[in-house]
Image (cartoon, rainbow, N blue to C red; front, side):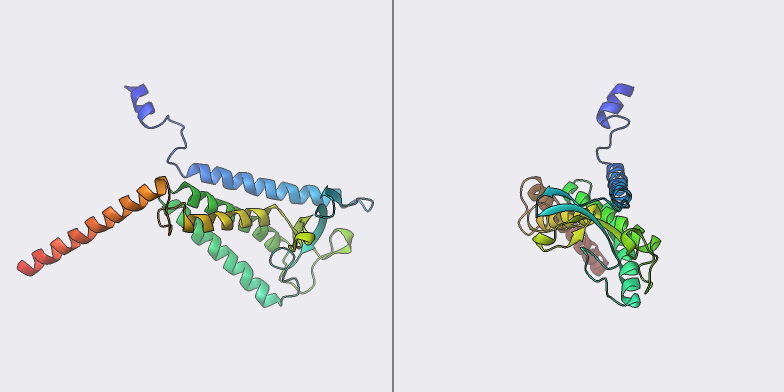
Length: 223
């Protein structure tokens, strides 16, 4: 009996149909982001350290602080603008987290994209708050630079400046969200595969709800 119950539920410790997997991925991404930032900061604290070429002239591991918004942009923004960005980021992260927990668990790609965006946003938010990037003059970190969000992946040749893993998480999540809106979600413009079935199921449920409301309305009118 016990084995049958576990089989039916997918196993006692199964994450299938659970929101816990998203929380675990979020934690892993935050750890990856913070550890890579810390490792880069420690490595480049040596005055003799030089940039590491991943793809020569295109992708380099370097280090800088960003007191702006993302990809090295907005460093010269006024303090009020930076505080508004920080507060807006926190609010958006909370709203996206709520959406993640409320979304149908079968909308897996949508939920994963939300996890990526929230993890990336939270990773950079930690740096912005810790280093108080809204202050006009920040503390001095390595290389004599004012501290801020720690960036270490130089992709300036690609037009994106210097960024970090949190920026990559946000970008990947954003791309996935676009794909969800187009194809891979219940509410997509052109749902495909299992999402087409989910869309049909959702439509049928909505039609049933409307029919039920109409029946109640007709009943009240006749009464």
